[in-house]
Amino acid sequence: MTLLVTGGAGFIGGNFVLDWLASADEPVVNLDKLTYAGNLDSLRSLQGDARHIFVQGDIGDRALLGELLAKYQPRAIINFAAESHVDRSIHGPGDFVQTNVVGTFNLLEAARAYWSELKDDAKRSFRFLHVSTDEVYGTLSESDPPFAETNRYEPNSPYSASKAASDHLVRAWHHTYGLPVLTTNCSNNYGPYHFPEKLIPLVLLNALKGKPLPIYGDGQQIRDWLYVKDHCSAIRRVLEAGQLGETYNVGGWNEKANLDVVKTICALLDELQPRADGQSYADQITFVQDRPGHDRRYAIDARKLEVDLGWRPAETFDSGIRKTVAWYLANQDWVENVTSGAYREWVATQYGAKT
Ligand code: NAD
Ligand code: TYD
Image (cartoon, rainbow, N blue to C red):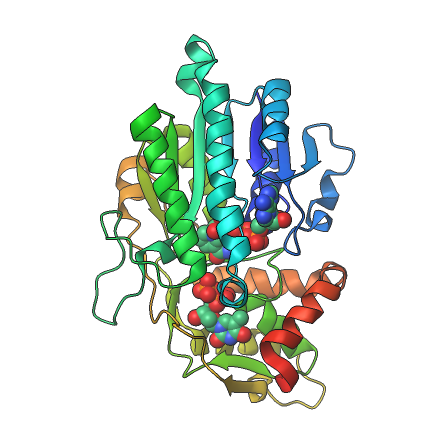
């Protein structure tokens, strides 16, 4: 038995592959285009491990997909591959449509061709698990209940619109062709191997370099943070026991305002690696221009996953963020490697001289 994972050199996919191979001997074929966000350094511990087969390629490449499916005969495809950064989607939405919409379409078509030729048990047990986001549901006011699976799709950014489109394709491939699909819609992840242009790793990195910590707008936007390893365990559970055609919201029950997240990171750094001048890292907080169309609040109602499949996150925000800060402090070599040319160019485009 084998899994085909796409986007497994990215933040969540990479954590998923590492966690999977830490607890199972089932091989993983990892198809990743290695965009700016793909980083094989995160998978360094798997070098020479025959259970990890890395293939550089695009989920939009039907010929390659056909070859991989025929060769490795996976029992499941888990689709992490995506363009995933809202700010980048504002500057250049084209790649988001190409990978998230057209790429997912091609992956679905390749999966359908493969699955329709499978026999008996292999056909019955095959799964296509699509990893998506809570951002497809749009934004909440302070008093709205958290997003449930029954919420309307109201995406507001090019990123969330492209993910919403991919979710619709996945749904339609189930209803029309019977493809055995599962979809997960997850809140903001954080943890090891997070590319340092997202809020938490960016703030950690800037703090240690003595740079400003950029807070968009008033910093009161709320996100529902989930430790990445909890996301991985949720995906494993849905893969194992999810009902075909269903969607599952995955969240951490950890709603936090951005400013509070940044202050928490500063307090942890003050404790674990104090500034040489004895001042707090919080002094580096700087308010910058808000993101256009910035969603105010995301929050996930993850009760369906708990009631139907018995999953709950293991980490609180306090325990998860402490682990994350400690991981970054202990893995400065990974950070140095990832802060390559593409990353530096992005920081210049997005923040100009501010950082
Ligand atoms: P990421 O940007 O860190 O990684 C994406 C990976 O996909 C990279 O390794 C990249 O090289 C690869 N990729 C991009 N285009 C590709 C293509 N055309 N073909 C093959 N590979 C390609 O993203 P992430 O944070 O790990 O997110 C993974 C998935 O989870 C995405 O689908 C994202 O929408 C979803 N998600 C992310 C979060 C979050 O907080 N990060 C929350 C909810 C859902
Ligand atoms: P981000 O990590 O980009 O995730 P998403 O946009 O998918 O939620 O951003 C998390 C929150 O932090 C979001 O409300 C935007 C905000 N933010 C800042 O205030 N400053 C920053 O430099 C970044 C990157 C994000």
